[in-house]
Amino acid sequence: MSPNAATATHPRKAVLYRMVMPGHTCPYGLKARWLLRHKGYEVEDHWLTSREQTDAFKREHDVKTTPQIFIEGKRIGGHDDLRRFFGMKVANPSDTSYVPVIAVFAVGALLALAVSWLTAMPLVSVMTVESFIAITMMLVAMLKLQDVDRFATMFLNYDLLARRYVPYGKAYPFLELGAGVLMLTGLFHWLSIPVALFIGGIGTVSVFKAVYIDKRELKCACVGGSSNVPLGFVSLTENLMMVAMALWMLARL
Image 1 (spheres, rainbow, N blue to C red):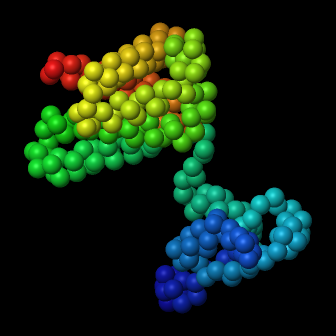
Image 2 (image 1 turned 135 degrees about the vertical axis):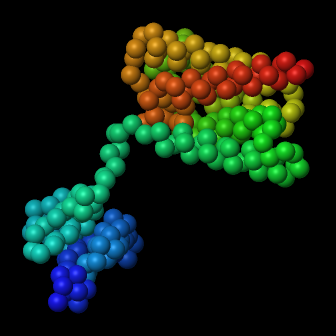
């Protein structure tokens, strides 16, 4: 019998201890069970159904967290340790990531295409680009508005106006959202154009100075105060898009 056939007949076994309480089921325990089964393991699933039982298990095995996985009698650890055991990547919360920015721009592009489709405009046109910029402004403003205070605090690290007038940091997401809405609807150009030029222009100068002149390594507040997007090209692009959109609309007028 081949090794593969033997494995298929007698699957490898793993022992899993996870919290399953009336008011709480550990999500990492569920993820660990799914991963083990996905990798072909037969899982001996032990539930820790009370805080007392969980604390006793931790003391017995000298561990601080659950779930805990054992394979062939050896303790592997928790869910992240299990992923490392299988040679899989484990996300580090402090690592630089452009995923939030990619998500915003991708959704903005799809919404712009949807607007063109619904308004019977050419699918790709100048109007599509205008919609994309306006929608993207609204999306990034929404992310900032999830925690305005946290955004404003991070914003103070590099924005030149916010450093001189602190309340500007909290006003910025509302100004960006309002300008985006007006640009998308084509209303009140006399208001949206100056606002976009103002906040986009100050932002461009601030980012350029912080990154390319002062050579500072900072996190960008462009997609909210909890992101790990580095300050630089992304934030510069966001601000330049606002300025370009405002200038384009001004030229059309």
